[in-house]
Length: 318
Image (cartoon, rainbow, N blue to C red; front, top):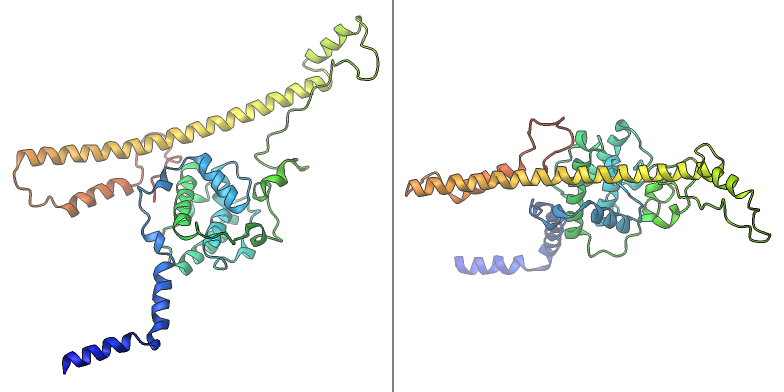
């Protein structure tokens, strides 16, 4: 009799009334499930800055040149919206935010989207809004990893339409729309090197007389000259800005290299100490697989507490 009831219950569970609950459970497991599978050793956490920016620009039709431009939270909001369209209120995202207090509402929208999609990830707003390279690099790496789980197979998302009607900074415009710099000089746009025409022979007339050539050379080389001096000053400014960007990039890479080297070194020290204990003692009752895994995770997920430096530029992965 009990066996017959069990078979009847099993057959009833396969009927039509339980189908909606199965679909709902499958949807809940699928949505946000990628976030729980993301670990520190995911490939996205080793993606360099240039590749991350290229991915974000292609995915969202942007013109990002620095990771720090993501600090406003607008880019993170649209990445989630590209994975789960309609779950982020894109009309409320402030793309023109320039100060910390203007960034916070964007992160409230992002947190609401995380909760709605079941994304279990701590958003450290206080660190991200400071526009530090390391903090935003790691969070952008997480967003790319989440997109690979949840949004990589979606090809029907229109990022420009999602932010249509919003006032946008230069870096939030498609790459083809920022070829010609606008008046007012937006950030991260390097001035183009003007074409020097001084000293060239006239195209429709005779060449300059020999007596005028020394004066033309002096005008080109004089620091306070006319357009020639201005062109050289602009060229020097462009080179100086490019050098500054390269210097910032190298500093960020060095910080990232030192951070992960320190993690590997601490894991190596842990393994060496465990090996020494195993050689000295045959049985270690407190040495279990769970204990070893916990010790390694404590090292990987611990924040950088190095006393050197100002302590602002490097932050361990959350």
